[in-house]
Length: 314
Image 1 (tube, rainbow, N blue to C red):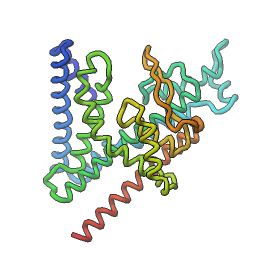
Image 2: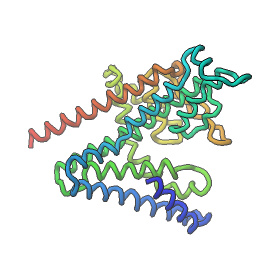
Image 3: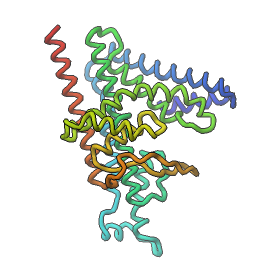
Image 4: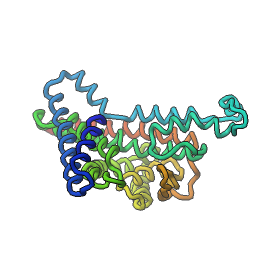
């Protein structure tokens, strides 16, 4: 998918130059072609592939486990003692504490867009917590939501697009947003068409996650109050979903997120989420990952229960 997007972007920019209307038109065409094509490919697999292959294809649309492993690699690379710091540095004259953070910075750079070269340990932990929360929604719960919607449609008529078609269509929109949805240069116009569908498709799953996280945290009486807090704190973020998802996990894990991030030469100040709570440590980040696993089980159990009730009543 990434290779196709890069190829189509080059062609679009060569054709449109710097003309905004042409870039918007090209972006719309790229979005329609990739999102629609991915959905059609998923529908074809649903109709033609044997069940084992369909199961594998469905699993490939969920990025929850790969995200969890990537975040854990960052945590495991962080030194947790003076002895560990001393063992990880062999450069005379170099600050051993800073040198020991290099493996964690390098692991973090694979999963975040911000610059990681100069981050200290608290900033590394905050970045890990923020990507664990935001990407849990984008990479796990949003595709799972559309997969379950597709399963419901499929149960009504197997000839219609089902779980794989909707999941692959969503993943295409999400990938387009991650690669082209930037507000700089020609991408301000070229990436608009890809960013808007992704924001729309993530909107409801994001708020369902914020509503359900208290259940995963063992606080069922706080569902609506925590949703309100996530919506309040996340409203200041320019993204309609990223701030809400991060704020929901921040309140559920009892930590403060947000602050200043550097992207290239630009320093960006993000709103504080769950302000006044402690900064995240390694245990808090692991707790966020555990909350995602629990909430995934809650969603699957709820879907199974609804399917059973529907089948019983029909």
